Length: 261
Image (tube, rainbow, N blue to C red; front, side):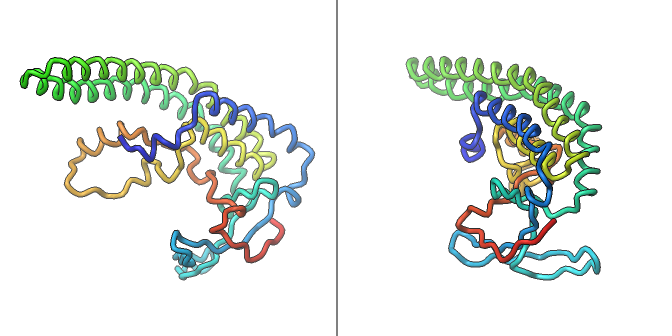
C-alpha cells in the first residue's frame, strides 16, 4: 500500500469533528462581510530547495500562456487558506452544481465502497495465501500460521472500514450539500465549508492524491494499475477545484500584495 496516502488520513473522530466545525461555521458567516473575510492575494511559492517556482499560466482574456512566478488566489483572511482565484458568481454556479450532483455522488460513493471492499479483501487474501502457502511448503508452520492470522485481522479491519465508509457517506453528503447551498448565497464561504467537509469525507487525504492526478506508470497494464490504486485508497473529489491550494502562513509562500475581491 502507499504509505504516504495512508499516513495522512484523519481518524473517524477527527473526520466528524471537522464536519461539525465546518457546518457550524456557517452561522458565524451569516453576518460577515465578504470583503472583510476574503481577499485576493498575489503570492510566490518556493520549492524544497528554496528556489522560486515558475508556472505556465493561461491568460483568461487573451488565451496566451505565460511563464510567471506570481500566482493569484482568494485568501480566507482568518485562516490564511488559499483557494482558486475565481469570481464570486462562478463559485456560486459551481456550488449550485455541487448541490445538484451531491445525491448521485453520494450514492456512487456508497456503491463504490460496497464493490471496493470485497476487492480489497480478495487481493489481500490472495497475497496472504500465496505467502503462507510458500511458508508451509518449506515447513515453516509457525510463520505460515502467523501470516494467516495476520490476514484474518487485516480482512476484518477492511470489512469494518468499508461498512463505516458506506454508513458515513449520507451524513457527509448532506454536510457537503449544505456547504453548496450556503455557497449559492455566500460563494466564498460556502466553498470553504464544502471543501473542508469533502476533505474530511475523503479521510483528510489531499486532493493532490486524487485519481485524476495519478502519473503514468511504466510496466503496469490497466488491470494492475487499477488494483494498485484501489489498494492505495486514493480519493475522488467531486469539487476538486474547491480544495485548499496552500496557506499564507506557510514559510514557503511569500505574499506580494493583497487587494479586495
